[in-house]
Image 1 (spheres, rainbow, N blue to C red):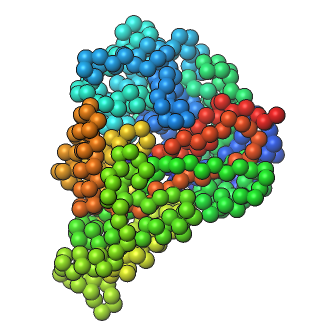
Image 2: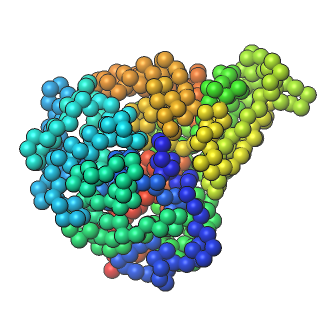
Image 3: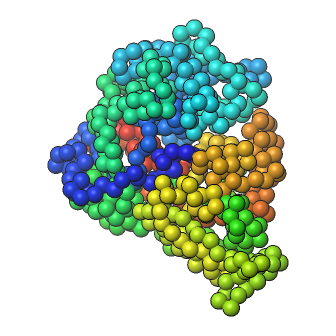
Length: 528
């Protein structure tokens, strides 16, 4: 996860400050009232709108389409492909036939060459793509005529079809540019239901309905994403009618519960909050410290007090109600056990209650992104629980520009989580081959048993073998925690009650732009 957008709704490159914070993001009389436009307040904006660099890789981009897409229940369905893929050669080949008559928003037709270009560019090591490790299974992608694409895999990869929700870009435009620096990153052209009409950095992105969209012209003609980093400001602007909807923390969303003009949507998610514990840290690199912190935290209290019940305790990267969750790893706060672990690890209490070992105090800094109240509250609660075990954690807010170079040695209150298959989120989070690769494996975790489980889960097609591998992984994380997993959070949205056919999906960490009740905004219809 190497881009600011992939890190999700915790970040924005700029506050909407001064006059911009009080003016209508559409430049007119505010968000309120129009049946064919919607203005949404989100906390962050993308660094890029190019799928070649990772934008929209999990689907639901409004500018682009993938070969496949996911419905409300996350079941794969055809998008740019006219049907689900034909799988052959024991799971080593996937053949897609393209839908007829699809055009990019500049009027040029979609062909198999565009699909081949997209995947080959992402797989090229010279492209700064966050998606490349996720496509490791691909040996070759080639066109078979103008309307067929054939993927040949290095090994059978059970969830491969789920990777082909990745958005397709036009070779005739992007192919003439450097994928890392070209204008396409901010001036995208796709096949999706909307086109980018305006991007004012730090303020808003405006999308207009694509009249040539193959799925039918959307009824909602204009979608504006207003960039408002501060949670309280988003709530205030929503209440004033300046916004039609917003991503909000549970406690602020609750203030709209009796508002007859707005409706609250609560989506279950794979999105978890965790503390990365760098192996290079002088204190966090000690396994006894990591084990003690794992049992010192009160996860239930964090759900109740910070999330107002809108979430679940996180005992690992997979939520407790996920079919891949390893039953029996649930654990309560146990301060006595934390103290025993520290005693046995040579960390002895000092006169001030803070433990020390070899003259080094059990103290470290925990960074969290500025403006994110939910992460701030998690960081402060974590520090409070750690103090009870004799570990001094100093919570410190900073921008991501400050956090990124420090995360090799300093702990970070991070957020991750991907839907679709365990491989999609766990490999990049934990595999040692990705240690220090941007925001992949940010704590540089290195555990051979976890690596073996990840490789088995990625390469096996046998469901029982995969399940056993991921259970082994989760139990190993309890014994050797590289992170302290805290909570899985529900995503909460408040939206003016003027449309119908709004639903939520089970959501990944990345939300705001792609997920939320507006994941299918092209299908909305005004209420009569």
